[in-house]
View 1 (cartoon, rainbow, N blue to C red):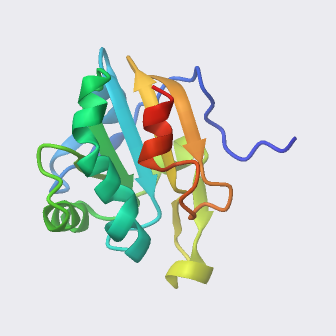
View 2: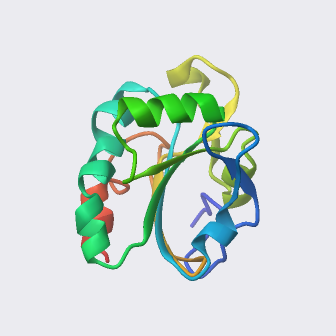
Length: 165
């Protein structure tokens, strides 16, 4: 069996900073998750058709279902800048439901071992994040669903993660 990513269930979230709204607004993901039940979803890019039409909107619309299962926070990350993530969150009406955090330099994505070159689908040769959904308790990964090809929406979709909680 080939290991496709570095992070596994039982691992602690990496101690890295993401950005919310501006480059000056740093959010340490391990501190954010400390003492909480958190859902983290990763996407290849903000404003991409699949991410904007179905994937992230389903986590937004399912926010109440996650809260009823004890989830404290839902976070969406992408290797984009914080201004793009803020604009995308506004466009999706994510406010108060899903926090949109930028992994501008890809530190979080790399620490998880979930980076992929999406030149073939996004037209950029920069490393991006494979699509995934994750559930963590007190900063420890409990559930992790990573799309085998990095971009499809099968195992990582909201309904699948919800059914596992």
